[in-house]
Amino acid sequence: MRRRLHGGHSSSLTMTHFWAAAGRQRLLKTNHARALLAGGKRSCRSIRIPTILLPPVVFTGLLVGLWIWYCIMMVVFQNKIIYMPGLPPTSRRERIADWASMCGGVRWIEERTMAEDGTELALAVTTVPLPEKRRPAAGSPDKPAPIHVYILYFQGNASSIPPRLPDLSWVLRAVSDSKTHALAPGELTFVCLSYRGYWTSRGRPSEPGLRLDAEAGVRWIAERHERAFGNTGIESTEPILLVWGQSIGSGVATNLAATGRVPAKMPIRGLLLETPFVSIRAMLETLYPQKWLPYKYLWPFLRNHLDSWGNLGLIAQVSKEKGVPGPMVYILEAERDELVPKEQSERLYRRCVDLGLPVEKGTVPVAYHQQAIARGDGKKLAAQAILKLAQSANRSC
Image 1 (cartoon, rainbow, N blue to C red):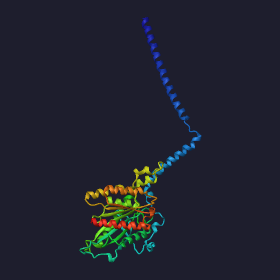
Image 2 (image 1 turned 90 degrees about the horizontal axis):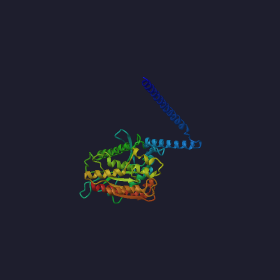
Image 3 (image 1 turned 180 degrees about the horizontal axis):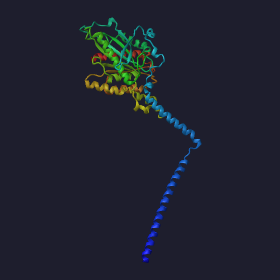
Image 4 (image 1 turned 60 degrees about the vertical axis):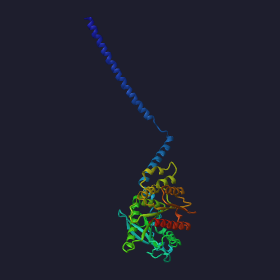
């Protein structure tokens, strides 16, 4: 009986010790958690920026924020940054009549056409006849069939078409007065296309829009040729289309030749690239080599490429697939070009050589970017380029 009582008492003490130990353990855990929480609060409260470092930290944060904001704005508004149709401020108010006295007797008229998306575009057009004494009679058995050369001109960035007409007129006069005439018998029609947003054209510029504008220019030329020669029985009058692009217009020209939708009867037979660049990306890397500037890092977000390097590859590929010779390319560079480095035109020249495209290059001495055909030597080289392109195209007809 005592043993049983003693055993019961021992069991009761054991349970009491167990519950006491469990209570102490819970209390220790609770106290430990509170200590950790209190310590965490104390550690958070202890993170303080010294007063002397506060201005640099805030200033650095503002700089980073502004840098990111600037990058976003450049991506969103890149069309307004790349294309400058409103410079100078008078560019949209220019008139052909204001420059007519400086065109050396070459008469220009303004025409209108419409792009596929309904955008109204302005054109400046002239036709230069060859001197009658050097024009053989059409249909003579020992003379070549008459041809009509069309030059579609794409301007550089900024300004408008009318201020460019005097220099272009002198180039045309040099072509017309050439003693070794590659165009006889025939005429030359020069068509200056004003991109959307430039001069009196409607719309806003973008690369897809400029592509539509270029295609509209070719269609206008094809329709004009059809009206002039389609119903006259002069079916032997062969159209030869040459495309001349200046600076940013070179990218428009190669875009058109590579992927443009042009009428089958009006293929592009030659390209004159004046002060061209490889691509927008290459220009960003060239103009802004500094690592801290955002420009060259934003190329994955470009919506405008004007990639003449890639376009030349497409031109050569399509020509090879069709089994026809590729169009001849003439590159006209300015010796002292302050905007587009000479190595860019050299890269395009080597690209043509590697692709097997017929190519020549001319350099205008002592000329800056906008002076390639403003100088007398440049006008002569441009005229020679047109003659060579027309002669090459005439042989391949």
